Length: 180
Image (cartoon, rainbow, N blue to C red; front, side, top):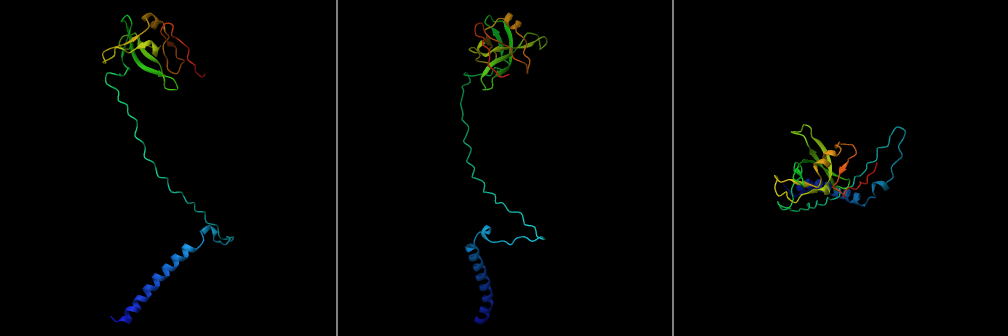
């Protein structure tokens, strides 16, 4: 192929490249779209809806790891299902629930008291401070309650979604402050 023929083939290619470069330069120097004048729509034309640009999502910060506390196996134990005994070693039932106030502070325990195999039993609520957890190193040991069997028998039954009557140890009962 001769030099002349190569130039003839190369010139259109160079023209296309120059035109695209010129167009790119014009777009960089032209004002933003909002500044350009747009003709008012005629009766037959309806304006196109404005295109809203959504901002790029902000980079999410990594979530910090949760705090971790290690409690020794002999330092803490679960209480649900634990047997409760009086200070004179009478069977008082077992803890079936824990009552907390709106701030999450433990206020009382629900004890399933009396009966045999769930028949004739009833739930009563005792003040948390009336319970002692000193001797619960393993699941077989019970929690001690500062109330007598007679006091617990005289307590009204606990019913969910009703006002709670909390039985406290002698001299320790104080009313709870709550909104009506």
